[in-house]
Image (cartoon, rainbow, N blue to C red; front, top):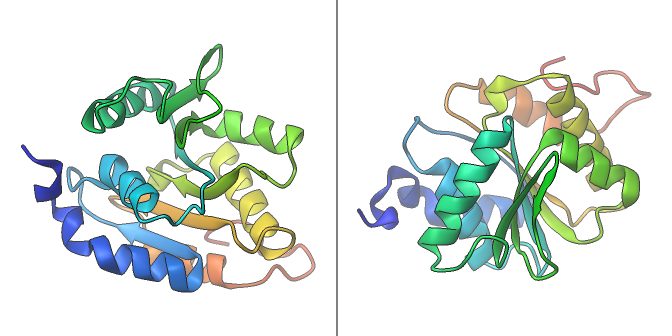
Length: 185
């Protein structure tokens, strides 16, 4: 099957336009629509990361590995080239890797090492309905980074079952004195 036949491709241009205009996007689409494998490729091919990396957060290590393998295969490359992944104890990311599939813990470690995520253009929170403490902290930190030192940093939140409106409101608001800093609060 041609990946461009997946339902998410019907939203290709609106996805790119929304992220270009607002720098934030919440995408809710059915399981199997192509969100996980196709949206990161759309963002990369659309030039939305401005030559920087697109980091796709996966809630589980096995998902990061398998999705990265699938996307690398679809793009005709080898894992660890243009497309790679990093999970605890496994790193298949090179300097020229543009699509990085990682767990929330890896992103938090990257934030400790580089508080501005200087090599990252977009952070995609995939399967966000599987929220946990790490994903909430990661979203809060990335949002704050985008609000302060990295207004160019794109944020995409994707899910099959998420209530989009509370997350969209959270991404659209400014933090006020540390209150309301978590999604859905």
